[in-house]
Image 1 (cartoon, one colour):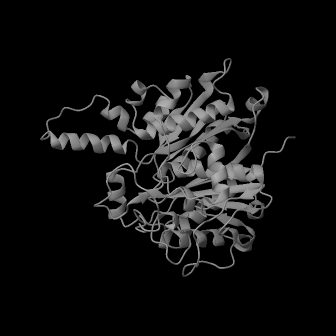
Image 2: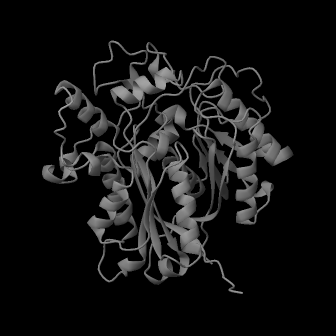
Image 3: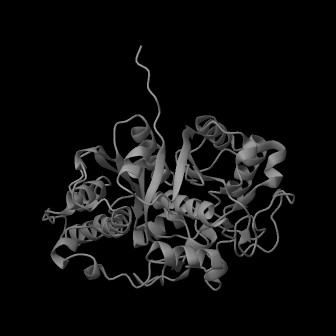
Length: 421
């Protein structure tokens, strides 16, 4: 029987392009300050739409990052991916000479891929009376896996390369996969993360049809109100998050800066409903328990949970039920915060962005807040620390991030404060 000694996996690079900051430092500083990224939609005329606001990336000029010729071959979700990945790769020093790129991979997520590309091409198709004269880049711009390929081609990374698609759990799934590849010795480092560009006519109309989006059009900056009695749906977000996961000895040997350590992860399924989470949070609870087991830690070791909480009546409550069941009495000693109240819901990119928040929390011993919650909704426990209103300082040795997606997908990751031996 083959025996495998699992390797340590550390974080050596971070990249972010979000509605509250176009780089990691800006994003994190705004998150700590409780800044909302919500505003009126600028990408199209919203006159006929029930929801007229979103958390858009602001001030993004693709020409600052790549040639226009290259940008035209990419959907916005891939452009976002390239920007976040570039920050992370440079941060980690993986762009330097002398690195074995055959053992560096890319596992990149997107729940929807090239939504704008699809929308624009179908509009042209119908306006042309269905004459099939398509842009030759239609398919390469559309497919979810293309961002992983583009990142690899830019840097010459020839290791494992694929895309994870599990709706809003997608980029957390990418992190779990990357973690497992590295600790099994199948890669030295992996660019893991996700990107999403769903602020399109089809994206907003589609989620409106599901009654998933907030319609608080006159009060958009406080529309995402997790756990609140008046919560009425999530606020659409967009952007990308990238994390360089690396084998510990490889990172040490090349003198990399280490930001934290990934120690566990798990993926489960509710097997319950197309779009709703299990009302008692059974799949989420199972995922958290499996992640703790994978990390070989006790519930009492966890200090902070970045909750998936999207500001929906059912989902917010079911997640807290899952946390209380999984953590028992220790649930009251945790800090829990719902950072989508600031960033909006980045769908397939949400997990990567929220994992970055967990890593930064372990670095700085600060918990980002849950904003906009004024009165707790029915059934929301009053004895939990939901980090309401402003950031809180506490020692954060271990942080967990939860993400759940349509189809019942659950993905959970756990990060630990890095301490030099």
